[in-house]
Length: 228
Image (cartoon, rainbow, N blue to C red; front, side):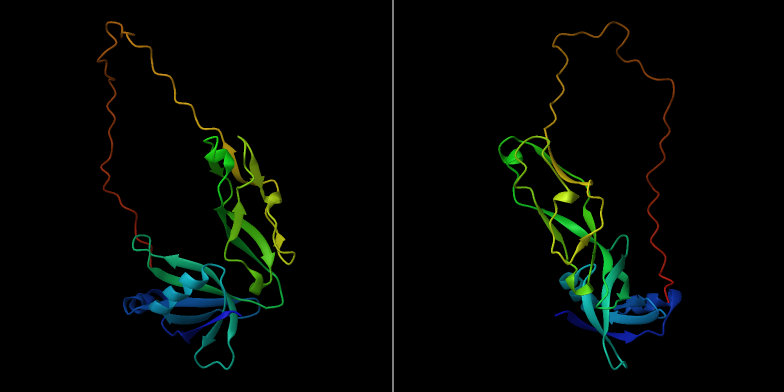
């Protein structure tokens, strides 16, 4: 059963939403097929709890103050401040519970690869999300991929090796690499000892001076959301 959260209608729009954030309120919007965008807001503490529990693509019921029935929504996108990482805005996607939707689900590597523990291989990651199609209530929060079968150098796992419930369709390219056991790099041999630098080679400087700019430029903070 999906979790249920509460939200309130939002009258403050555009750049004025900064005042909401300053008072611990997160602006949000609900989008969906056949409906107009709905501006809502939630207390930051409730948003933090929701995201920690449900994550991106989390399927929840949203009770909006003044409405008789809850809305089935997906947490589709979260905008964060570039420095503080505080949540600044959330996009909810209202869905039909009987219709499959598409989503990119994080891939989580689990278990130990014998190629690593016995042969000192290095795991190289390929794609880190898997695109799938499923009913809203069947969307997984993550997809676990075991590397226990990787025993030799160059052993690999591809999207085609991932097995999910029959109710979930995988849309990613089946030939896409997920993870590979690669041989460790061999350190380059050092120059033979005693090799001397010929006269005139040491201490030669380039006539061209490289002018480096001071690292004073900083990433501009993102402008306040104009989402209605």
